Length: 485
Image 1 (tube, rainbow, N blue to C red):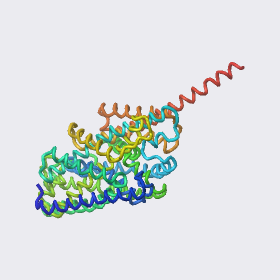
Image 2: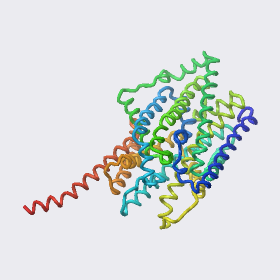
Image 3: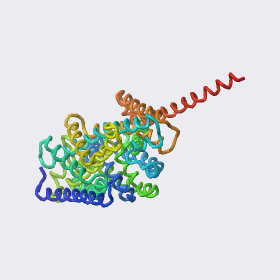
Image 4: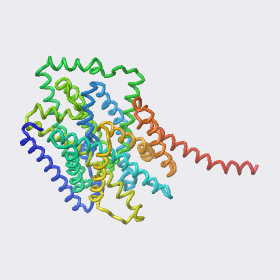
């Protein structure tokens, strides 16, 4: 339980109230604008960058990143640095183009982006297949957020696991249903500021504790092993290169294959404004990610025997900090996990409403409130999180990687306007997913992330399909010409 729980709970409650107020304001603004489709395509660079950054952060940052730093040390600072390389490539080429394509095609979802300018029976099939991939992978990713929230509430307030999971999920499902897409943007931006404040406090407090007993801290770090402070423990040049290149490819796949992120780029007011959000997004993501990994490393020297390192952030503040600081950290952890969960729920609800349900009912005119779809999907993912077994790290990384493997290649093809057909995109999606699954289950993902393998396989499959089609179309004309001779 939290020390000084009364005051800490007040701080946490104020954060919840502010979040619900932001969701209600978003609903009112949507009503005034007569709709909530991508917030009217009027987001500025700050709303794009902070909203995309908090949605990307996820419970991974305040649980798995802390746990990795605590358990393995400096090696895992290499992960966000590798991710940064992929983000730099992604932001140079894609967000502005995604925004321009969205304005031209009036696409609301990633699936609509993929089927743009395609005709024939395969066009709706692409939308359905990509929506199914989105719902399947994001359900796993959302379930990882519920697991992170369960660890957070159970540790902070001493609640039983199932009650903690249900309470956390219900709070987010309700405010997501109230605010819709615009509410997701508003609450994300609020939670970004909470995240920044919480990160600064966390690093400051744990560093102060480490310095207050430097000899004990040094002893505990030494006991962690020689590899703890080595960024390349036992690593050869090929394995380090594979690690960096694999996660850089995963970052590109994340940017291109995550609908909850792409929707932010689609909603930008212009391509120029969207691209200029890159430094806000990357600064926020890198600061919070590296800071939480370093927090875990320092925590190893302060509290060397935490049973579950993924709970290290909340455990440290419960036992060592005052009520106000603990309340801010509780609010910070909630904001981090809630922002991603909220974005995921809205993205899945949009995919279902735009790409699946109209075809299920056989009519584009069928309209189901986004709030209703959000509630149903949220309930389903709660059940999934109870059934699955695994850490936040394994569930989150596998879901993100498979999503990128299947969808990043086709999105890249569309945005860069490379030659493609409905058949080639379908084959690209299936090939990317299949290659990534084989790579992962063969045990090779430790050497190179499966997202990179899936993206490469999907791009090659599209190129081979287009090339074979071109050869087929040219063959009859060549044969006829020879007969004429």
